[in-house]
Image (cartoon, rainbow, N blue to C red; front, side, top):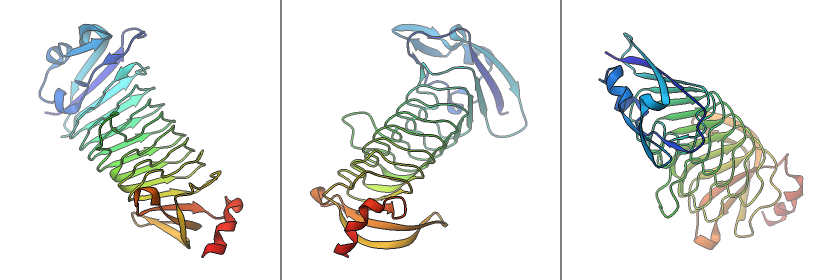
Length: 274
């Protein structure tokens, strides 16, 4: 039988807590005592989940396991790592590497998510109701395999290098982003409804980046291709018009960068090249 697990921190954490065991895949089939004995790290000290958190558990008829986190988890990292099913709901802020490598299931954050949310994820869905940190969907430094599939939605702003080395899937930011959105991108789609700080698509070789707000400039290694009245995202039409650029030419890229024409009148000089 599937279960609902409610987890609350016993105190405010001062150092990072590594708890990739907080996952429906790990909790499935376990009772309260087994879940409480799962191993975590608080800094460099071995702990159990029960040492750090109050845990309540109840059976339910639904086939889906739900983990409900209440309170501040901003120091807790790797929640939902590699999960394939079930749901995690976080009522509060959450730490780095949320949903890292996940291939299924759903994570909902009713707060802020720190850097590397959805890092190298393969499937599933992450929805962040607040803002998010840097490197959304990106892999660890040194890895070349970014996000391959799934969906990440951020209702607030996001930081630097959103979708770094992205290979598939959809990232949608309803706020603004900092520099280098879609850096080294290979495939997939990134939609930014707000503004971009600049250097969008640096090193990209494929995929699409749509920026509906303001951007200071376009990298000189992109060339304008045409003006499009709209862009379709999974059957949804986003009204333009949009300047469409191709690049990054420095990397022989064939990525597409869509930039709002109305929000960027300073880019109108590109039209003479059409």
